[in-house]
Figure (cartoon, helix red, strand yellow):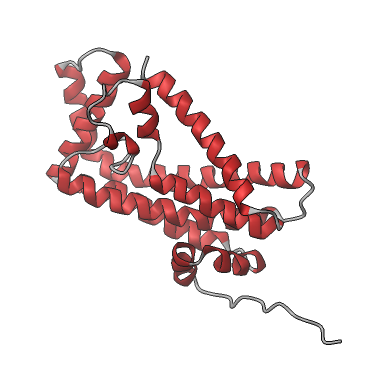
Length: 240
C-alpha cells in the first residue's frame, strides 16, 4: 500500500508571507507553523504602522487634523471645552509627535503581540491541551498583524486627504449611521467595529486553527464574541 505524504509548504521570504496572509492565509500559515520566524514580520508590520501614524504629522495639514482630533477626544471625555492654555500646550506637543510616535509604536506594538501570543498559548496549551510552542503562536499573531498594518496605511491616506483624523480610524461602522446622536450607545458601539480588526481576527483564527488542528470557524466566532463584548464596554463608557 502506497503511503500518502503531505508536501511541506515552501519556505517563503517575509514579503511573500505578508502577501500570502492577504491572499491565501491558510496555505501561508501552513508554512509559518513549520518555520514561524516572527521577528521579521513583526518589524515589517510595526514599521508600516509607525510610518502611517507619523508621516502625515510631518505636514501642517496632518498636524492640524491630529490636533483637532485630540481636542475632540479631550472634550468628549471631560465634557469641558479645551482652554486656550491647553490648546497651546497641545499645539506645541504636536510639533514633536511625529518623531516620538514611531518610538512609542516600536515599543508598544511588540509588547501587545507578545501578550496576545501568551494569552492564546495559555488557552490552547494549558487549558485545551495543545502542544504548540510559544514561538509558533507568536508567529501566528505577528503574521496576522499584516492586516492591521494595511488598515493603518490605508486609513492614514484617507484621513490625510479628508483633512480629518479619527481615533477609531476612517473605516469604522459608525460612519454608517450619521443621522444618530454621536454620543449614543449604538454609534459608539459601531465606531469600535473596524472591518480590518474583524479581518485580522478571522485571519488569526485561521492561523490558530492550522496550528492546533481545530475548526477555524469556531475559534473565529469565540474571538468575535469577545471583541463584541469589548465594543459594548467601550460604548457604555463613551456614551455616558
